[in-house]
Picture 1 (cartoon, rainbow, N blue to C red):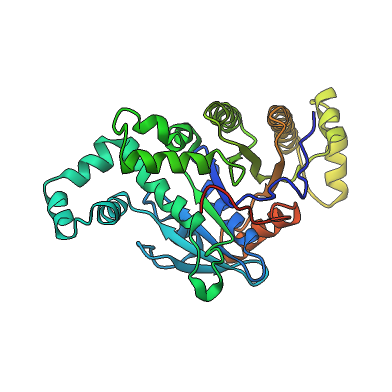
Picture 2: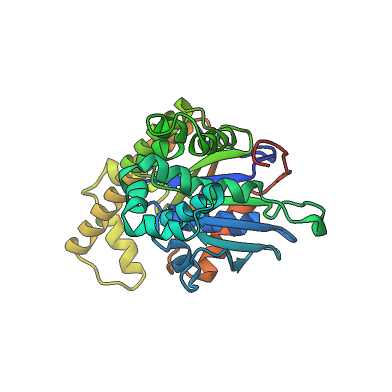
Length: 347
């Protein structure tokens, strides 16, 4: 079974791209590359993080982000990437001021520990506050001076890992026992409408390894169960195969037959013996096993029947050039095609 190839219409009307993946798969890097790919000429993309890890600032090598939205990079073709790190406490204080006009009283609540309670002991409220900032950014419009245009053409959310993504996005369920009515409940309902609308997709980042692929499969099922639309599967850190299948087959047929290998290496001017050739053969067999396992994981990914993108392993590590290489790879595979604006629930 082969990958589902992306098409130009896969993300038509999508304005909120949520990126998740098992820890260690490079989801923050992929989210940053996606934001750069979407930031085409004349467009603005907001890249948001909600885990207080300052992953965006580290990825783009810029000063730490705070409560203010700030440009962190240019897109591939003249667009702009703006970064934002959402802090749950700051979001709660803003929320209290917006709905209850608490002013200085909000500071008193923080001193008495109410803010810590709402953002740590009541995780459902915390997630509503974090996603609420994203919700506001998706629907935000400029003033009359710009004719009411959207502030951002797209929003990319660097979300929690796949093990927590379902609970994080299922805000209605999480606040059900805490808020039956009132502003918190209304906010949760509005957020849910956006998350379950055609404007939102959740992209899952994985490696060609058993545990990340299994978490991706589990997360896809969990997201579909709560009414979320699974977007792309993004296979990160792919290596170029160093051996052709025919060479692996030859090694497996005669792993002890090293005479021909010794001869070939000798003709290249290398002095070799059985220890070296035996080590080379074993390395080749190990590589063949890895390629076989990767093929099995590809087949598991293909069963999800989602558009699949492939990103290379950056041999020289992640820097500005490497990040642009990943963004180019995503753009070249069509992830930013047909980004039409869709009027809907977040406005």
